[in-house]
Image: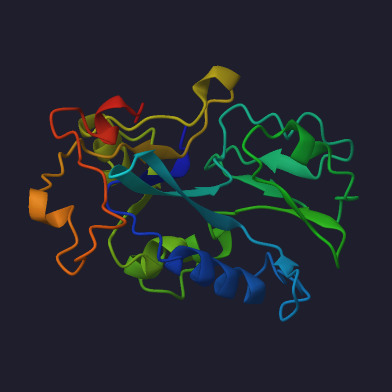
Length: 242
């Protein structure tokens, strides 16, 4: 069975949010839209997004790493959001494995959001329906577009090529090959949802710090000196479970 999905390379994602903005632009104007915003220019803005990038720092200074982690609906092969929907609005397509929401049936009860262990469901506060990534289903099957453009908006917008798209059940697809050859993994497999999206782990790299990089040259009073790096210890990538 075909299972379309995204494969995200964490080693080259730079957290630029091009995927977030392109997703917002395409889907606001597309079949899944509008994706409304509330109070966009006030102190507490919020809005509906299909894709978000979480950025955090790991390790202990000065041996730290900044990690950018894009996350959206993972189009699980056994999606827990589908059976809990009381109206049948959430469903998984047999022909390509994409999980979608029928807005005409959705009553905004949020059961699917509670069932999703990844926090991938969001309610549109104006339309009062649950929304999520559709893998740009209205784009990838649009025969009016050149074949090279029939990909999710986030994939086309990524400047570093961190996002791949394809059938992860096809052993010859680019996405499946990357997962197989580069150790792609599922997010939180212990939930048993069999997420279709995969992540390619960050490669283990060692940062070589020199003494003059840890000492301020313009500090005659010898204040605020940075601590020496313990260069013989492993980097954060070597003890983080990527």
